[in-house]
Image (cartoon, rainbow, N blue to C red; front, side):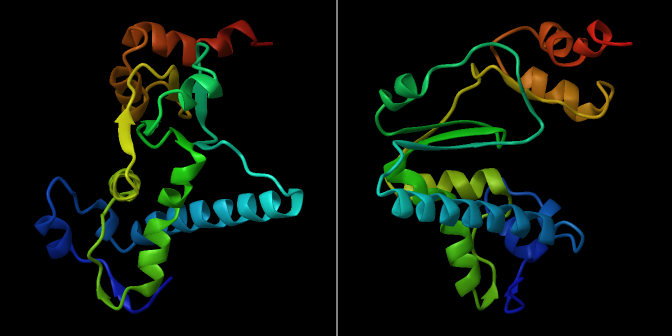
Length: 186
């Protein structure tokens, strides 16, 4: 962590639509760790591209606890959207390669920070600002057929993320994501 960069509740409050969650001592490292992971991942991709003397057409970020419950667009269909960086919360992000630096802008700014943090105070907004700064349209696609599989369907966030997507009803999303256990129970 950058000891010269300070996350404060006051700075978070001063920014529109930002909560204080990541200003808490136990949560700030979590946020910074997420952004450092994105930075490290893009470095690995760039090294692979250099070694292979090629470049990918797009960079896709998805969470390991994401559950895809229906087919999605193909990469080619996403690329035909032009300047759209398509995302569903922080679960899935599809970025044409020319906008890949949006994944690392937070980390670049954070490592240079000296004083109170002036950037976004949660990951989704940090990515939104970064991609928009690069000229992309950051599109929240609620039709993306993905949810998060929590440890239990009774967790509040399990219901919330199924409610946030618009591809299927909340009830069907919950069945598709959680009832699979009943089909494969021994």
